[in-house]
Length: 224
Image (cartoon, rainbow, N blue to C red):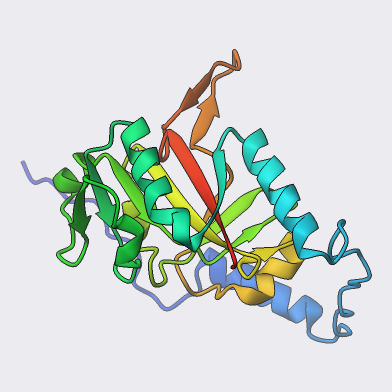
């Protein structure tokens, strides 16, 4: 018995459904007027143009998101980081390239550099990570990372169970998202963090640590 194989799709040069749809759209709008520029007369910030007000609002919103927030000057930062790591029982800490080494000057935790980089197994076995940030947004209580110096690749701040993030105040704090966007490079790998990673099911049972660290400690590094 001879079995005839199923015929293959036609290899003709007829346009695909996608191409036909796009062609009809282009034809329909070919003679249309240009779209008007969007109106941007909305408020770009809802707080006074005051660094102290932005700092206080960021602190409150981070706390509302269940992050632990500290305020410290550079002189006290190494001791604070050591105390935070000890409080959480962190015996190892991932260190992004470019992070100031003096920040770790008071801790006995093993510092694991990411020059290698750390393998997935090594990263999963690391208790904590310390990073800087690109900026922080006061009105939303959000920290933005862009994999810049002292921040590391995205996995570095998502896998360890504890993230200690240092925000320089007031230089890295902006009031709102509209004020933040011009300072962010959209081509970089951005991570927007609003509190510890958390989700909830249909019964509203909150579970932390599903998509990132269960514990977030934010250090507001004050000038002077």
